[in-house]
Image (cartoon, rainbow, N blue to C red; front, side, top):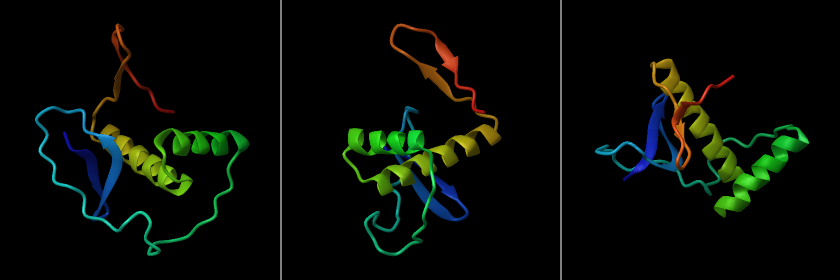
Length: 104
């Protein structure tokens, strides 16, 4: 299993998640190091709840908040692209039926 990658405006993005589609043949992502100083520095104003969720994502994955935010953005962009192409996002909890995830 490879990591889930997709291309957006000519740049390959890595969601940081393992691919769940069996038989997928994907090459590794070629990208700048996440710790690289190249890139754009931005300031983001977020609610306390969003800041707590970002902290949770970083802590549970053992990564920086910047890396957690990059992964979250890449994952959201991946889901958006897939939905625009007619894909459904499905979720199955243990011992439960498969359900479609509806995005607002």
